Length: 481
Image (cartoon, rainbow, N blue to C red; front, side, top):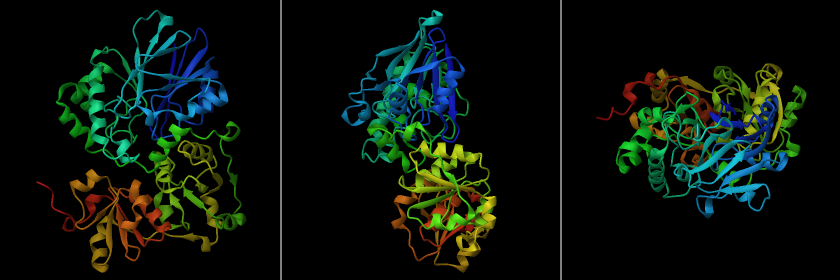
């Protein structure tokens, strides 16, 4: 048996390539849309991908299941659980699609994958018990747990409400998740837990950085799983629904597209943006619906000089899909500002994975030194230690806190407006156009992304850069007892 975890560090997402080395057949589980890398890994290991499976309708990226089925002839194994609103509509009636219910199984060579209904994160969620019959095993060695059980956490049950807009389903989903987790009590301690996400994913609040675990360990030391197995239902529900991060806006679009069918990549190829010459830049930017994404990690360089209207979306650290997914419409024509031409392919992949396909051009940051000052601007900013003085000089200004709701609730600047940076685009009408906005977060990174977006939208936004604890205590609400 061959098993490879293939990780997208930006989204903290794991796909799994599982193959039978005797027959050469393989399955890819929870693939992203740029499937060429899975095909390459399979070929390098003497395997051919004959099957693809999704654990559920994903919210954080576009699935590659349709790409694998329609372009590469793989048989797709998809959930039929969850009721009429949570079906893989795109695959219905397709000869290569097979729909699974709890207890159903399929084989790839001598490897068996058995579906286990694990609803709660989503109604249709399946996990897969993996058994290597080719080695003589009679019990599963692992659980492809999707967004059901993570290392150190479990899948969040609030996304249907907080991201997809289904009002009133958050608490019932948490109760369903509680029941699903308790049903795992019949599974063996030795099962490897092979999760779809790790630390940094927005699909949970406390995911561990260790790539895999075993069920027995998680039963003892995973707080959420331990609570489900040992505490009253309401205790679990209250805990799992508290402290969940505000999801990026693009999550709702991913749910829609993964249900109806992600668009196939033209000719199965990734976009090939063109390198723009400096002389062509002004004309390019003058076109309608152009968005420039500045991928520089050094936000100080961005603050000092950048293209007018550019969004800061650092490629390093996984902020590109979060910023682009929160601030860029799917129809936008995208210009990339990169540090190095080698970054273009990775940036294109990260954008395509969240359905931003129109990546039209790129230019390097060093080339921008030759761009006319008429096309460039700087971002107004102060440090957190200067906020008190700034507010004294501009008493009409508004403080905008773009941290998470839990951070804001723990302590915040008195009178500050709170909108998480990932939700700004839907709440701009709450911000006054005519007033100066002092925008802060916990360290300056999230606020720098938000300030660039607000400036693009015409607001008089000033970044408050630095650590929250450097803001004068005289400005903050007292610590709650």
